[in-house]
Length: 115
Image 1: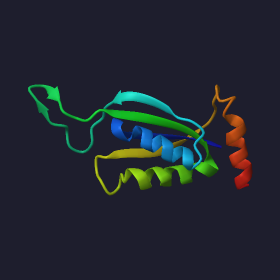
Image 2: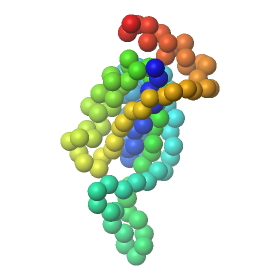
Image 3: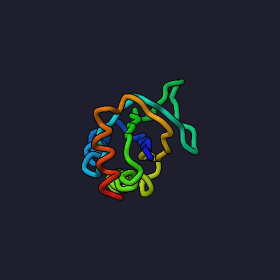
């Protein structure tokens, strides 16, 4: 089974998260720039201007067997649990996907290695 790992971090952490995820087994990444969200407390504004930091959403597709290692590596470098508001990461199952023809051999290889 494939997993989609979604990471939302400040822009200055994006490259470091991608590099770390690749070392942990990610075969590629898609970055969506300038996403925003809100945690438990609403962000502060001044005269209607929002002062939240610019964030990126980083998407990784990985074999289920590699996803936990990638998530652990991202958590270790991002410190999301230790530093509230620094970012989040989560994974969801992928039922079906197209457009991964070039990555599938590597993803399948990692699945076979873990079998």
